[in-house]
Image (cartoon, rainbow, N blue to C red; front, side, top):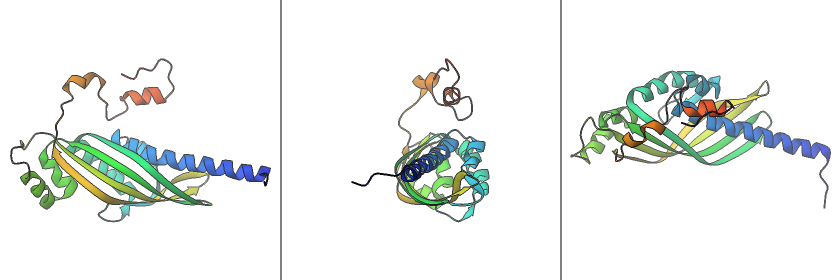
Length: 206
């Protein structure tokens, strides 16, 4: 059995560290979107990065300019859950495939136009003729992030992000959060997670 040398161990530890930093990027992106945290979202991309959310390539900063105001206007809550994450590292470059399920609670069925386009939205609404036009609607998507990461100056960020859809669902919202209002998440820095993750002593989760 070949014994690992000190340099081998250092290389393995460096790879583990890099993988963790990249994985944290993927999580920070989701948190930035769900909490409408503009600074956090932008920090996951290089300024010259490209993003394509299934429509077109655009500068990632332009994407950030567009997506958070859109979500603030049309959704009452979102939750991006990541699962399988495959990473391939090559020096200062890495590529990744990450599975994601994105849940969106929209303010009304009218907001579907923004997410799926007017034609598809009209077809969806036609399938629920009894739904109230201004009642909350849910839109969910199963997809994969196809990413290229780059390390510059010792820091990893996204250089390219593409989104490939596997399935989508849309239907009238079925559950009211009225009884859970006290414990409901917030989409800004007043969310309890900011205090908890800051390490503040005795930070409350509610």
